[in-house]
Length: 387
Image 1 (tube, rainbow, N blue to C red):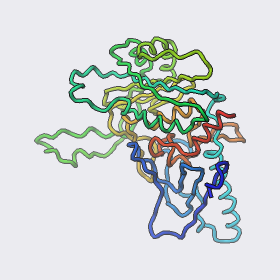
Image 2: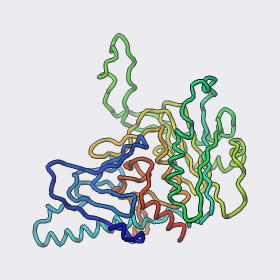
Image 3: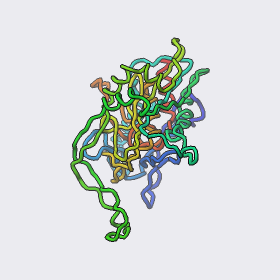
Image 4: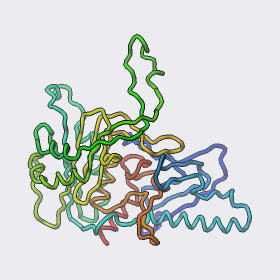
């Protein structure tokens, strides 16, 4: 059905016979360490969605506080509507689900001001690293920094938003922090600290005469601890970058941008740190989207818990893998695409959060699978440019 016209969308509502076992839908996330969250629906690369009323039950959303959590009752279960009067209520509940899909996937709001059309979009990724030069790097070359950031994957996904002869390119530039006092000044200007109670697990003990490398001693449970974390203030970082943007570009050997409205040269600043501690932007994010730039941080910390749960399990974050949130930030900054869980309320004229549609191929939020886009992001990006 969805192949009949490129100008229409198809939403399938499935209600198969109850299975003998519980099932959910998950997506191939082999391109990323993010495994995503399995859910009761499927958002395809083409213009169709299916919603399975028999799948589950499952729950996902914020853990300790927050809005938009999904419960087993968030989708109607047909077997709960038995009488004639209740079946009329089922129709109303299904219409509500379809309306929610339209607001989040088919016609999402604009994330910021009007998006302009540019014949050429050049995304300049500037990696600011605190790693010291390695004299043995030529003998034992590791993966290229551009590969670690997943820039080739970014290029492929962003190219899907091209309109006509438009071109989208992603270039990489390196700026060692030890070579640039300006980059160090921007970093330390934005550095902050915060003390809070977090779920924390001590590092695995080294093998010695006491534990003899016993695996059980390494798998200690997460417990609540008061810990002080460093983080980066994105607003303060942007203020520092704007004060010395030309000098930073020159230090990173970025060619000057031509003075023409047909081309957009958009900067991305990634602070790639060697620390084993978790450092985030604004305490919660790996990458933050601004109107004039994208800023992010990458560390060597181990997997960390996020304050979200999926199917009664805590959601994990890989601080070294920022490809997926970087893709989402670029879509938001350049094409004005909002996060999948955000929609606009006509009644209050304000944004609200609903995580029902946050699973699957979306670069936004904690539940998506890999650095992927669906028809929702691609169509929204093109529509925002045309409008």
